Image (tube, rainbow, N blue to C red):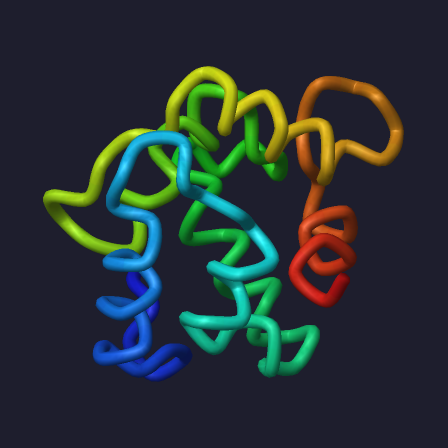
Length: 109
């Protein structure tokens, strides 16, 4: 599964370029730049299931680390600090994972 049909390739490339440097990732900026923030709740949920690589129903810390790579081959991994900040922003219930509803809230924030 990919983001084809949900996000424009040019927008994704621009979003990835905007956070290519280590410690430059900002989820709000990224979601806006790639166009995900403007998508419907259902489309955001589709994106969640692409990012949830093990299909557990949650995005865990190891999947967040590889977050950018789900948007483009060759993209960098998030740094430990970026990963922890991203998880903290999205994990509303404190279980150490981001569920689908938490992800939608995070994207739409």
